[in-house]
Structures are given as structure tokens and as C-alpha cells.
Length: 348
Figure 1 (cartoon, rainbow, N blue to C red):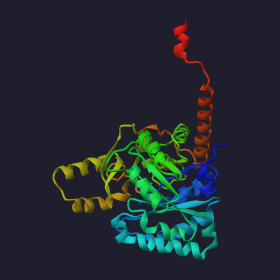
Figure 2 (cartoon, rainbow, N blue to C red; figure 1 turned 45 degrees about the vertical axis):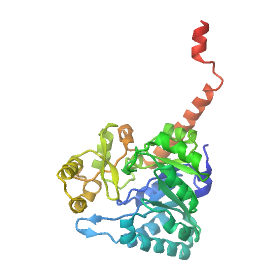
Figure 3 (tube, rainbow, N blue to C red; figure 1 turned 90 degrees about the vertical axis):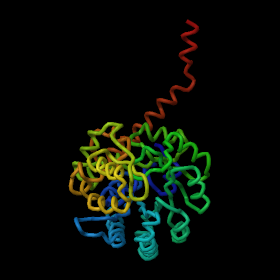
């Protein structure tokens, strides 16, 4: 069995993390990933839950913590975005609520192992969370960001390459470059993200020095994920070239190409202000994920969508990934000591 430092850090069976997918809800998915031996993640919900109904994100996450705590057999994490906009809206209140839950609910303290911070400065809440016994991971797109996360006390970093779905770095650094560079730059464990969807990917991440992988798009296409079936079917139909990086809530973000993407690009070409684009896009957030409108809805999605061709249970997917990873590692080990084919041909 493959076990790494993050298995020990979070007391999980397998080195697989479920990516946060805010503003969408991933409560059921988090439970399923936890039950399968990985680390499920409660996403930072926001924007709209129902048409014209603004989410109370603090009450929503508090409820999600209680639901996952009661239902999940294993441990779990949660995500708080720390972008400037999010700090103005709800991040401080969320952080206070999480600390209160850990302090006052023994079962939450036992099962909630980590907070994943993203999209901003890791300094803001790291000490606050660590003081109550939580581990902190920060999502980083560059070596510079990884070093900063280590300096402020993060227990691990999630190095996310440009292939990832959702928000990506303004400066494209791809996964195969980013992961070994971050591994070389920091001493804390590195989780690889961006383009991972199977056991070969896990084996490659381990070969680059990472301690595990984070998957987002691959976990959308599971039976337990809350996303609409149309969203999942659209992913299965996608090619590796069917995503595009456009304007996101906190910067550039990778989407599956549809009418929404083309309309946003047309608005930008006309010189439409970012504020007007924000107002235009706000009601479109739940259209694909909740209502199944895969044309006008927002479809955050990674490049690995071109390799996702089924909708298994989370348990079956995790077991498949681990089996493929072990088979890949065993196959590579058999190459060790094998006589070089070129030299054999030359001798002939």
C-alpha cells in the first residue's frame, strides 16, 4: 500500500485530497471521499444557492461541518478563500466560526483535520487555526508563494499547476514544472494539483517528490457529487482542448468552453468594465452546476476533462486510482536494471 507523509499528517488511508470547489457545494462529495480513505473537503460556498437567494455562507459552512462530522467515517478538511474580496465579505466570520466549532465540539475537533486557504495571503489565519490544533494548507501557483506559506507556518502546500480547473495563476506555470520546483524549494509536504485524474498521475506526482495529489474535475464526475448530471455528461464529452482561461472572480480561471465563455469574451472585447461583467455573470453561477444549463452556466473545469470518460462511485474511483498507481510504480521498477534497448540493437 502507498502511504506518504500526508497520510500521517491527516490520518487518512490514501494520499488523495478532494479539491475545494467553491462557490459550489460539495458536502456529499466530501463525505464520500472521506469514507473512501481520502481527505474530503467542504467548499467555501457563496454567490447564489437558489435563484435570487443569497447564501449565508457562515451558517452554510457551520451546517456543513455538522453534517460531515456526523456522516463521514474518516477525517475531512474545509476551504476558506482569503482573497481581498472574500475578506470583505465573510472570511473573518468563517474563521471565527471554525475556531469556535473546534473549541466547543469534540467530534469536530477529532475529525476536522485541516483548513485549506486559497486565493490570497496565507498569513492572515494560519496562526489562528494552528492554535486550536488544525493543520493548514495553502494553495500556491509559484515557488515564491510556496516559500511564503512555509515561512508563516503552513503545514503543507498544494502546488496547483496551470492545467487546473477554476482559478489559476496569471503567470502560467504548468504542473510538471511547478511540482518539482516547489518540492525542491520547501521542506513541508507538497500536494500536487492540476491535471490529476488517475493512478498514473499519482505515480508521477510521487516521482516528482510530492506526497499526494488533489483532484477536482475527476471528483465532479462521481455518483456522489452534487453537481447536475448535465455538467458531468459535458465533462465526459470534452476533449483536452475544450477548456479556456478567462476572467474569474479573483483573477484568471479555467472554464469548459460554452456560450458563457464566448459571451464573456465578447463583452471584454467591447471594453465592458469588470464591474458590469461581475453583475452580468452573478446569476449564471448556479445555472450549470445546479440547474443543468451547460450552455449559459459557468463550468469551471480542468484540462484533464478530456480524459474523464465515466461516472463511478467515489469509492470505486479512489480504489482504481490507488491500484493504477501501484501497478505503474511496479511496472517502472521492473525497468530498473533492464539492458538498454539501443545498446542491444547496436550489438546486433
